[in-house]
Amino acid sequence: MSTDTVAKAPERAAPPALGHPARGRAFRDQLARVVMWVAFLIALIPLVWILWTVLSKGVGLVLDSQWWTNSQKGITSRREGGGAVHAIQGTLIQGVTTSVISVPIGVMTAIYLVEYGRGKFAKAVSFMVDILTGVPSIVAGLFVYAVWVTTFGFQRVGFAVCLALVLLMIPVIVRSTEEMLKLVPNELREASYALGVPKWKTIVRVVLPTAFSGIITGVLLGLARVMGETAPLLILGPYTKSIATDLFGGYMATLPTMINQDRTESLQPAVDRVWAAALTLILLVLILNLAGRVIARFGSVTK
Image (cartoon, rainbow, N blue to C red; front, top):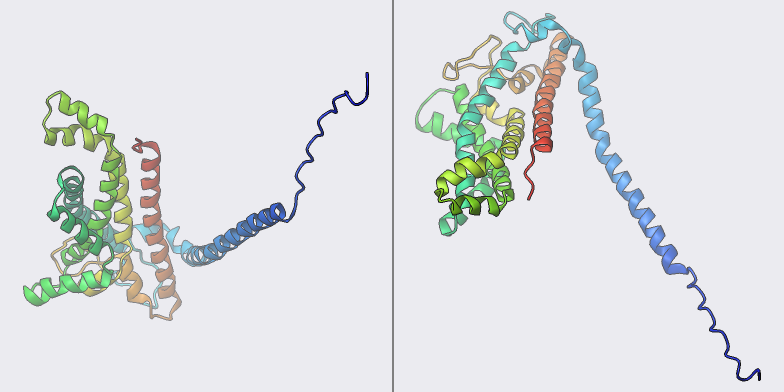
């Protein structure tokens, strides 16, 4: 057989050489990863610094049982001891009252926007909710002060503080509830309608139970936010060192106002109480946030 007739074996294509483009992509990927880690650490430093400072300076009093059982009645800036039960009770009372007012309004507003709102009025309501979301707390406090004290002549009381906090909590509940209602599958609604169930009963017995855990999470996160607000309390809530549970009785202590009361003191007992009150407030907010995360994790709505 002639060598001319012998078919030559096909030559294998040489593998593409790793040139500069591949090395460049790897370098850019590594650089982006380093930049993100650096940004994360920079953002983490102030948080860790604040937590460590508050924890190291306030943990001594917080671990004392008197801190959770006694008030500051009769305690001067020079005197050690006392507790924060009056401020803790005031914070919880105002938080619960704010939730009792905000939750029905926020949930019903979200139901209207998701289930019924289709026209210009719904757009106007949604726009107003967006505006409330961006309102600073001091503006809400001044607005309630202008209406409650200046216009109607009422006294500065704890209930007025709750009204200001309601303005801050409602948009949080509306938006979180709205997102949870949108996650409820339409098949559930359609199946209920096919059985002849009215729309309002479908919402009450199908939609709301399905989105219940997400709604509770939004309520807890909104409550955690308003519990840490300070401006409305300074404007509308006069401070007292005694235990006060009457929202209409004038003076009522809260943790933010307790911190503000002694923030200018230089004596060590007062300074220690300021740090302990700050740590207590952080713990309350942390508990609410963790509760919201747990509920969201184990009872989330999925499409």
